Length: 335
Ligand code: ACO
Image 1 (cartoon, rainbow, N blue to C red):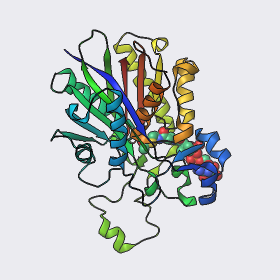
Image 2 (tube, rainbow, N blue to C red; image 1 turned 135 degrees about the horizontal axis):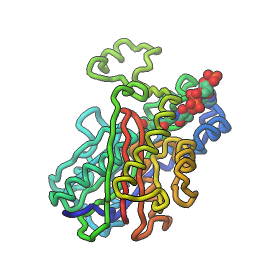
Image 3 (tube, rainbow, N blue to C red; image 1 turned 180 degrees about the horizontal axis):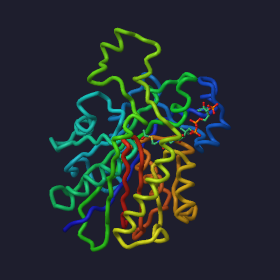
């Protein structure tokens, strides 16, 4: 059976930097609160009127990943696009990337697993590559959160943590023994779907109703998060699912060369690092610069880690995520 190797990574973030101090002027918050609770210093927010939609940002990241892989867009056989903030309610942004790249009519699949979207997408792509169906799969995570956030004091518990951006990888069929994606593990618990969710618009609370009602107190079309509750589940599930991957492959935490956790909150990453006995060199964080970019956070971090020489041939890479759904997952990859 074949395995799946990461042969190129890319990322794109909008130029517009929004600092914690900028947020102080919009909502009743402070740089000290945000840094102490989340580690975030600044994030990128697409300015209103920009052409940077989730699919456009995804295509920019994809072009970089394809170039790093030494390929051209025509070499791609399959597109997998993970996001919670698609350009349109439907169709999903995967098909827009197919068009924007100007490639033949290859399939495009959209993954709706929020912060775990990239790990879910990786697992899906891995199955297609392992079985020999596709050779080069483009996996993208891209999010445009900022234009849909409640930027009043009412939304401060959610809005300060989210940022915009995109990351992408090219996954390729590999025939080298022991290389590539070694294992992936996925979970969900829909019981807690509403603990971190954007409930409107939906098929029973549709746009015409919202607009017609124009109810200023209707917050259903802003993301809601029961932060504390999510935090407690995140720290448990992250550890569980990483241990599951280590157990399956008979490895220890000390074997991990680099853990790239979904960048949800620096305190979550630090807690996992401490509980798993990992050193600073074994964990990659960039949430300080970008905030939580949901499905884009792991591929942006991976692209930066690879560019910065932190991921080398033969390294054991661990990816792990937890988020809305609840969904969570992990992957171990021998580079
Ligand atoms: N600025 C100032 N004060 C604030 C802010 C803010 N931005 N937000 C909340 N507060 C206040 C609250 O009003 C509250 O005040 P009170 O004690 O007077 O009532 C106090 O700060 C504490 O609020 P909490 O919500 O309990 O704050 P917490 O310490 O839990 O931090 C946070 C909030 C950062 C959101 C945290 O809960 C968290 O990171 N949760 C997990 C996020 C996560 O992992 N998400 C999953 C991925 S995202 C996805 O899947 C889409």
